[in-house]
Every structure is written in structure tokens, then in C-alpha cells.
Image (cartoon, rainbow, N blue to C red; front, side, top):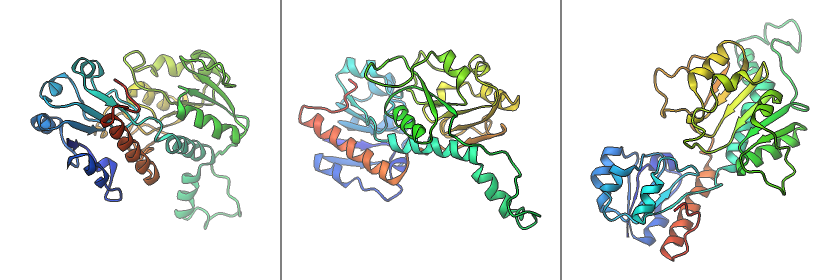
Length: 315
């Protein structure tokens, strides 16, 4: 089997080895292959391991020998699934590998917003404490999480992990999801009710044609004044100019996003200069332990495909 890893640079900075792939065949590792570069060579490979490259019909037309695509992520909206199904190409993703990491980063945002850790750190390092007349200068507003209402949009493994952490902080949790789990004790509500009641709204759902841009001017207008907004899911869920306007107007007290509609960030991205926003470069999933787990799942999926029992199969 001839295999190709297209975007090794985001999977490892040298701290994780791809050597275990080699027992399944001949492996080529590319650090950051472009779409056009992949199109020129994809005919050489039986198996492809990708992350965010767009695997569309024109590219699949050139993939004469391709039998397997390993999506190196949970989301697979970058792959034309219907076309893969038509061609008999098996696609497997790496579900749930980043659950703990993304839930952790969600609360890193929340804690930083309400405890103002980075603000106070900067205050001290700019000599604010040295020049303070009191031992405990109150120079910005902080708040407790206990009693706050967290609205979780999407209730997969990450949404449920965020719920567990929130309850440890004695927060109230409400959930909006299209799939209601009868066995769950979660407080399921409509989207409008979630928006109107939540002090914090956090997105944890996949991007589809139906929900693209669902968080827009209308959605933000239904949120509580001063609410905090978080997106660690997919950038396409949010209308970025509308989010920027909600921050500029003060409708939202702040926001944190780990994902954008265009990645890497465009130099003209409206969120870059918006007030009270924290932006991280799609990094919630990158802890070492998380990436190591991801590689293990990818290898298990490949082993299952070769042995006729594929795991995490999308099609």
C-alpha cells in the first residue's frame, strides 16, 4: 500500500513519529501540501491522510488508485463524502480524540474572561501593583462562575465534557441540540430560550450546509446583554462581521474563538481588531497528549480498514 500524509506539520513538530505507519506499506510524509500539489501526485497513492485540505470531486477524479481516506480530525466537511461513496472510497475520521483538550480550552477562555488573569498579569508587569497605594488593587471587574448559566450548543462528546466541568464550578447548564438523549439528565431547551437565558454561549457542533452562519446578527440580538460567546467548533458557524458588530456595540461583553471561516487568518479579518475578543490559532486540539491519541486512532482506523473491519467509518 502506498500512503501519503498531506499535512504533517500540524500533526507533529518533531515530537511525534509516523514510523508505525510503515508496517502497512510505503509512506510519504509531506509537511504542508497544497491542493494543486496534491492533485498532481494523488494518482500515486492508495491511502491518503489529510486534515483540512479540500478533497473535492476534481481532486478525486485524479485519484485513480485511492481506496482509503483517513481524516486526521473529527470534522470531515473538507471531504466530498457523496463522491467518495460513489467511488467506493472508505473514509474514516478520528472521533472524540480531542474531547478533553477542547473542553479544557473552553474553560481556559471562560476563566480568563471572568477572573481576568491575563489583564491582571499585564497590570502587574506594567508596574500597576508597584505603584498601587493598596495591597489589593481592584482595577477591573471580575466575577464568580457559580450560579452563572452556560448554554451549550451541540451535545456531542465535547459538549458533554464541557457540561461536566461547568457543573464542577456550580454553574447552571442548558443545552440546545437537534438530537435529544432520553437517558441524559441535561436540561434541553430551544435555541431561542438558550440564547435569552445564557450568560455564556459555547458552540460544540459540526459545520453543515444547514447551520452555516447560524450565529449572525439575528442570533446575537437574542442573547443576553453582556453575554460571553465562545466558538471552538468551526468558523463557518459564525458570521464574523456580525460577531464583530456585537462586540463593538457592547451587546456582548466578550468572545473567544479558536476557529475562523478562513484559516490561516486573513489579514483583513474583521475580528482581528474587534474589542474584547480572544483569538487562538485553531490550537485547542494541539496538546501533545491529544495529538498522540489522534495518531493512535488514525492507525487503528487504518488497521481496521485493511482487516475488513473499519472503525469510525463515515462511508
